[in-house]
Image (cartoon, rainbow, N blue to C red; front, side, top):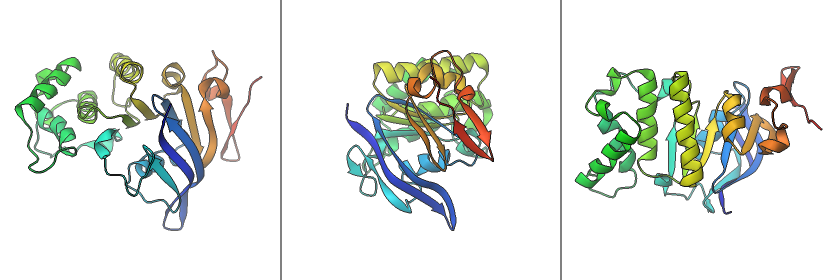
Length: 251
């Protein structure tokens, strides 16, 4: 397998505050990585640094073998941010128009959505069960429906990497099952590399093949089976001590 994301000795700061310190790992094509850790541990910071939204203080990131500072094929990466930061409720756009924005980054000028593009958008909306929402304003649909719309926007460009930040928080149990089943299908059939930030450890153990645990520093990176024995809940493999996370290795 080829390396998709390579992180070497990465440190990130917000002013004088250290958000990430000396993180190193390598994510390969077809990996499904669960990115977990405590609140304030740097999960979203790491995702934003991979996406080029935050600069490294030290170290570097390579995407598809290219230094992220020189990388310009961002259409290869789909991003679903946290729900509460995703949508301005006053944004006067329809569901179809929001999804179409996911195609614009790969287009050269003039950046127009073609008839063929709309056919692809319609097919994806039908596949995700939200075609009936196409003409509705994004502000008029429910939180769970908005998450599906934003996932469609991330998927429409057929990205090779999909980065999702707490994507299931607005979904009811049935929609959550469907959501993770879709991610599994993308990962297994389309070989889409997935990095999923979540507190939902039950789903991580069920779908991810690797776990990346950070608490500003790297706690663990590797196969799920190396982290916690099969049949055990991932949360049971940790304890908090003096405000820090300790990993319990099980024999």
